[in-house]
Amino acid sequence: RKEVEQDPGPFNVPEGATVAFNCTYSNSASQSFFWYRQDCRKEPKLLMSVYSSGNEDGRFTAQLNRASQYISLLIRDSKLSDSATYLCVVFYGGSQGNLIFGKGTKLSVKP
Amino acid sequence: DAGVTQSPTHLIKTRGQHVTLRCSPISGHKSVSWYQQVLGQGPQFIFQYYEKEERGRGNFPDRFSARQFPNYSSELNVNALLLGDSALYLCASSWGGGLAFFGQGTRLTVV
Image 1: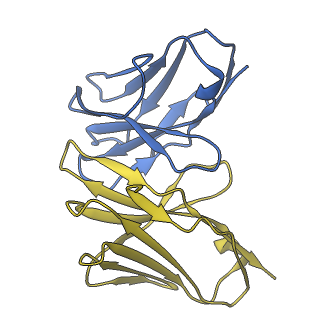
Image 2: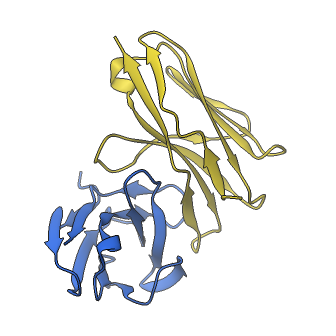
Image 3: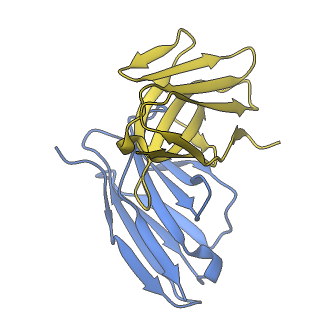
């Protein structure tokens, strides 16, 4: 079983739609969780951290379920500019840790 | 406000050659990590350096090596290049925890 699993998509949605991405991770010792956004042929950019209490940043909501080892990202009122690949990322370990990435979920928002 | 800088941005090498990639972290960040991203996959961890010491190594052959300098900049070296080494090489800068920021990457093509 891969350490971080995501549905690769693509998710093709119209502008204004609500879309949800899911991610599961295998290591229960994982400490921190993130969603990164990656545009074609660019570097990953931090979208948001993910907390058990859930966190929201504008149209984006992230949620962590430690018991189920499951992370989600909800995007409301999709914009054309949201088209990108969304990477689920898990971190465990302190100064010696590294990030474990999922393969990414591709989102395409159409007019 | 200088982010993570990597050089060069693009590179073409022939099989068997050696390559050196460079990274300057965000000022104040003591941790530098290297990742390899091949097309269609999430980034894969190669090395982490913290305070100039290697703190982690991913599942990569000994042809890959790295170091971190007193100013926290870092080099990634790859010897005896193979076609399969063609990828986007990403450098990530952090204070030492999970929150990391990426440079624009070096796109390496081996022919």
